[in-house]
Image (cartoon, rainbow, N blue to C red; front, side, top):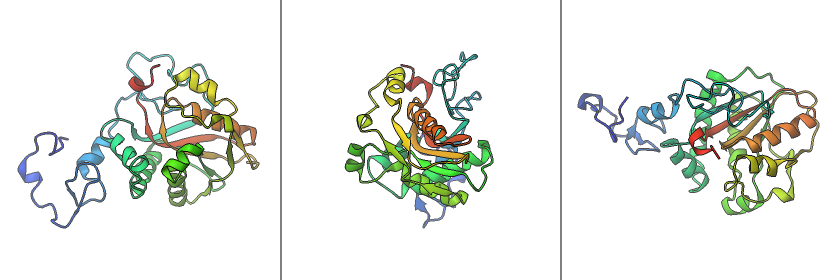
Length: 249
């Protein structure tokens, strides 16, 4: 489906859009259907590849027939991961608006996209499931003034009718450095023992929430900490999943 801003679109499909409809957050066109116009919503939710890793939600390259390059040989502690969309254009614009430009109203759009995909691909969750946000590093928290994962976790938990546990995870002081410049193996090494869950989970299922999943090292470390605290199955729901071409190092 061509976007009228970026491709050819017949005139009769654009006639009749309500004049008072609010602009789409991504392209600016009038959107009678909410914060995103139907063209941008379609661009975000279309599958990039038919083959996707069920454990880490990575859209696999055509030749990845035997193993996911991020999960490796059984080195990923999550039962399943679902992503709202892939972290590439135009979805990266939503993440940037939310995290960098501090447009907190974007959280509602991200949470809705996440929930839409969870309903399609995620397992059923019982009422005892706990929703846990990935904690922010102190420097990032001071810079932004909020934890993006916690904001999303609150919205997701409310919509699912589950308990949001936003203060049960402690981040090791030695982890208070940026991970974005590290490669896959270096991230996994750096995140070992990064988290401690402060309350017993008593066999409950856990749904971890984060804004962007890059290599999975952070979520894997947090999932392991949840299992140490007695969690049952641990799942993850993220707003965006970095594609393979961006994480192959």
